[in-house]
Image 1: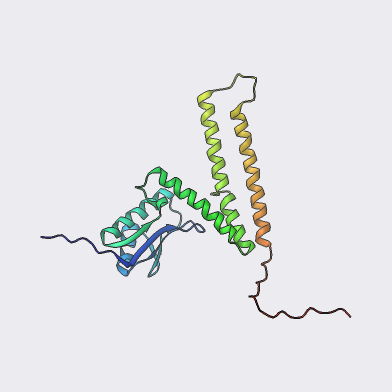
Image 2 (image 1 turned 135 degrees about the horizontal axis):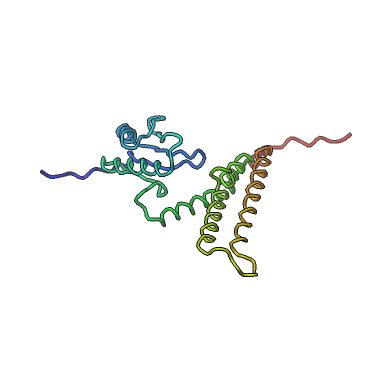
Length: 211
């Protein structure tokens, strides 16, 4: 018996990615059949016919597992799927690094295109949020590196300044920098929105004259 390969239709395209604002893994697009596969294979919750998301509070590795499982089930059923490389458990470590670089570039693009203080504040929050901001997470990695280096090296007997002690001092500066960014975030969020610029050729009201 001849086996048929699945047909891939553009109208059935599904995108599985992570929303940078909410941290939720979402699936967008697809047919009713795709919706059923997302729910049964990946544990996605249905928000609308072409919008689905994973439950709140899942650890990142669980998000990756469910997203990867759902993506491969969709592919096996003949659907076209784009799975964010950061969620794909089968990619190489370089894929995670590339995703991180894309994320940083996306933040720069968002703040460059910001038209309100709230939009600037959203980007600053992602950079310095205490729980999962980029800067606090980077600081944690530096602290762990310093602790590991100290455990491997032991106490320095040199009279010269200890680079590892200096590294730990830098982490305090990183904490202060995060607090300063959050303070700037709060200030940006309170900034009034700029008035819309009228299109060229729009007549302006005459300026009032002093008498």
